[in-house]
Amino acid sequence: MSIEVRIIHIGVSFGAAISLIAASRFYPSLANVKPVLTAPSVHLPAELRNANEAKWVEWSRKEDAAIRARLHQGDLDSLVNFLLYGTSFTSQPRIRMESIAEASKSGVLRTRVDDLVANVRKAGGNERLLFLRELLRSEGIDPGGDSSRTGVFILKQLERVLEEQRSLAERAREIKPETALDRGSLFRYRGVSLDTGLLADFAIDQTLRDLKNRGLLRAGQIARVGVIGPGLDFIDKNPVSAYDFYPPQTIQPFALYDSLLQIGLAKDKSLALSILDISPRIADHLRRTRERAAKGAGYVIQLPRDVGRAWPPGLVAYWNTFGGSIGSATGAIPPPSAFLGLETRAVRIRPDVVLTCEAVDLDIIVDRLDLRESEKFDLLVATNIFVYYDTFEQMLALENAGSMLKPGGLLLTNDGLPEVGGGSMRLAGATEIQYDDRVTGSREIVGWYQKR
Image 1 (spheres, rainbow, N blue to C red):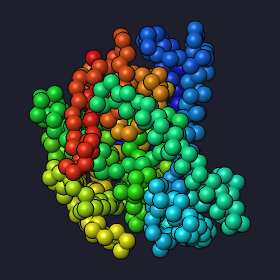
Image 2: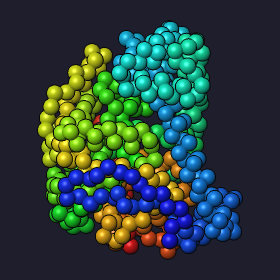
Image 3: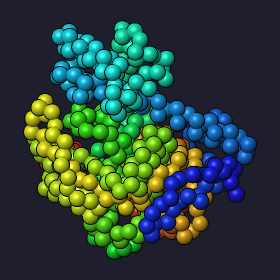
Image 4: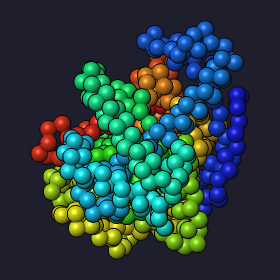
């Protein structure tokens, strides 16, 4: 059945939740993906025209490696975002993309670069600076060596990102969405970023409430759920939500767990949550988090909120009650004085909740998990993921997700995915969420893709 089987070694899952420890990931066979390869509108890679099994396996291996390599490019993008928006390593004002030229003339940019280079050199225990130090070393840059060489490298990354921003703006103008959900493949040429934030979690929360109100999800129905690419809050690419005054954190797995309990769609201590991701940083973060939880330590999530933004009442209520079913309020880290009007709260997630979450190395574009019917997911969630891939890759991802869902199970995503004729998934509907009452177009659309 499996073309290539690689056993997943995961720590023991505690409580009543079922573990995926025995599951293996594999490339689907050529027969599994035939509906995608023969779809009339699909633009096949040249290597897959008149493909046989051997060609399909070889393409899958190369595709998997290419996707994983894009993580490194995304990390370099985070280096640039940190340079522009970070406040933990410098007293200089933050720089917006549209103000780069002005910041360069005034010397603010140069000082920020110098401050970043100096602080990476003496990173101490700062998790972000330690990561950036290793990132620079992977590029052949010695952070403890020539400061000017390190600074030049960082500025070259900034130049690259600025050029990518210009190209993205041009592509965005060319996209003609067929539905409100469709964002096309806007980021298909850029690095895969681990950015994450609370707004996407609110969108999923509201979608789950909508589905329950419509009778498409029932009380206590969800027992097994998977999060595809939950992200790590290192520093956001959007200056409005880019903060670095607290440690890196992952939010979505716990936000989803909390929403399912608060809405009544799952029962506490009987919910299994799997994190499906290709990022070693996510896997390592979860591993260390679970090790601490096994010793009785909870997981603290910081929740900054800019009161100057006109959030609708529902979003404010979500921020105020976040984590109420899976943890308790704890002392928040005060924001720097540069962030006037920023409120913060923090939640400590219970250790037993942390221990029900396990990380699985899975590339949703080319991988599936070998699951028995009883082990398949009731629900999968993927936000801001599929916009990084082209139409063919999105079709493969949709069918791979479908293979891991129970009949009637749902994939919730804010990216429009092309359905495959004769495939296992269909778009059953969508939920619209409004974020900012004062800003036209400040909304999210979450589609419900259902297993036939």
